[in-house]
Image 1 (spheres, rainbow, N blue to C red):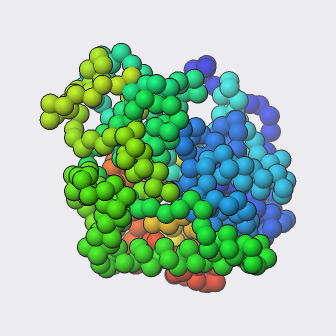
Image 2 (image 1 turned 180 degrees about the vertical axis):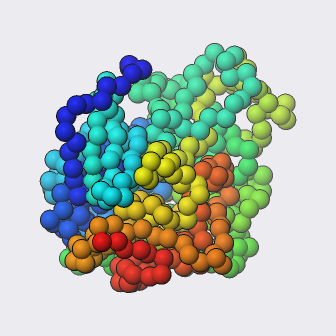
Image 3 (image 1 turned 90 degrees about the vertical axis):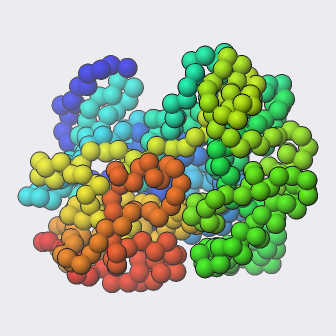
Length: 494
């Protein structure tokens, strides 16, 4: 890949809206834009050579959703599969079917990686710098409104701590985000470092597809919850009701139960802890050391719960295919890992399921009238716009529920906003904090390592509306779908 970039001499192509990212959020944004703002010209700029975002990028064994597809799916597109907890390829097909059925796929410009965007107040437009194709030719586009749907983590690679002795290991080290398609783990001993959603997905999948044995090595336990991959209620509704109605009923049922369970975790954490650990004990039997390996030091929902569909993870443990070790790594060795307890783990393959690298706004550099913008110095407005940044919105889903619930609401709000601006002749809008009593709070109140590592680079939330994130679908629905577009914080300019 060349080190130098050539700026294309072709004319700057202008759109009313540029959507960055052709994953779950970007395709959803395009659907809403076509339906609710049909006069708007737009394009989707996708950095990779394929659509689907996360669901095309991640190729590790067992890749699946960790929430049900009745809430992870789009509000406007019923999920038809019998499995509510879906595998990655089914989710990818779902996203691409939406794009194909509505002509959105023709709006996508692949291998168009947005690297910078500069706002001009006199022109009321963004100029976007894009690296195009394998040669990374630098082109410029312009738009009146920039819509960031590029997710929340770096696509370049996952988080990998520096472990002592990694270069000594004679086997293969892989990260789930860059899973090699030629990796043959048949008959091999595998150690998976980590105990988050990726590890809990990978471990039983590898154990059940040829690995000799899989060990999950964790520093500390994670709360896990079980549910069937097929939702009996949802499938019953589909047999008895029209498809769209059945989907809506199941979606609302799951939304409300999720909200109830989250509030129960916050208000009665010890009760929920007993409930969750009781389920694990029942799945693993009375002789398993649940206290050591499955009892976290934190409260339920201080970090995201890990989903175990059909108890597959626990079943693999009981069958002897999987072991869980709770310890710290002292060093890699030629044949595996030496732990601080003195125990040694032999491995042919070590999988570092050690998390993601979070980046704000897809890592795009922003400037306003020639001045560099530090997103870490901004407040986030209604979970989607940023203080003193005009005509820009982003999509970030819920941390305590399915991503798409919030994404759909953001899309509705942005389209309402664009239509209001057209009706009133506004050239741009911009949230601005003029409240001296507003105090800054962390963007997300989560203790997970990947969140804590990134907080200093992220925007802040405020101590009250409209700068505070409530992580509550019903409150957001009332605000974003039905609430006023005008408030003291939002400035409109003709």
